[in-house]
View 1 (cartoon, helix red, strand yellow):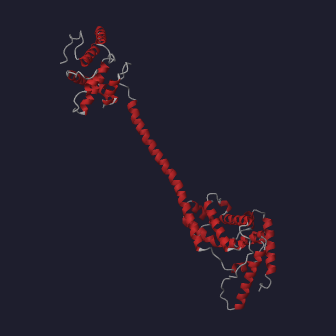
View 2: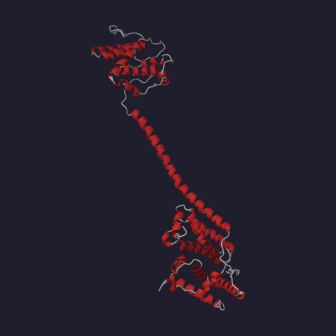
View 3: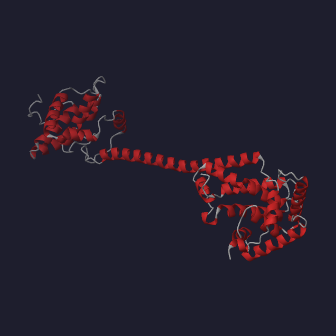
Length: 182
Length: 228
């Protein structure tokens, strides 16, 4: 079953296969949660939206069309929930700030590790400073691994618009990450 | 140009992004979501199962009902053997008696009884034997009621025979039995006419019914041979 595509798993869950759901959930629980947390900047909001998104996936499984793909569908729901959250003003959107949690690295050079941690912190601070569309495009690319077309479909915009947003986002990030090149 | 060529990309930024700790949702959320997913599966099964069960139940009930109606219709569909000529409605006490002495045997059984000639002969002989019994004064005004006044210790078979014979008598009389309130003179007129028309069987039937009803022979019927 581990070789099954997302779409096959979703179709099996639709027919009542709970193991297929577990597999699908295992694949996307991390990326989806991180997408929401890095978009909202607040863990409690991310948890609430995370649960809402999965409830919609479960409740809407009969409306899902396999030709759209599972991953774009999942992140489209997440993106729409995020936009609803911002529009409703349920929480003041706090600038995204990563707490500096960086993967522990087996490196004999503490200076390198400190530099990397500093760069990661800067990256997430910079992400929080991006406009919401730019940050969404960046996170959908990096966290969800979507293509240009898929990001455009999720954000309900054009492919060229997505490209433009990504270029601007990367330009701003590069500018803020000077010294992290080594 | 491929998709990857077109996608704005910065490998160093992507690598830096992936170095951040991969945060995970709390375990209690996993539990809540899994439970909901499972519940939805059960709901769906119930949505599938209950209509199927309901349909099956309706089918079984319908089939049972159809079978019962067919059974009923089978009896109703048989030709009526005890059809009577339109007569005056029975008096209230008579109706009450008829209700309390509801025939045990259906009309279909009566039909069977008269269906074949040998059976008819047998039943005619039974009728003759029974007609020897003197009816009670307080008893009935027709053959049916006479039979119902016999001792209650008789078996159901005997009771059925009585009803059958009553039905046969009425049938053989050709529906010419006078109404329950008819005076003996009316019986005499019908009897005379039957004899004149040489309808001996019906005349004999009428004579027997008269004797059951009034406890004596019809005037002019004395020339008939005794029953035994």
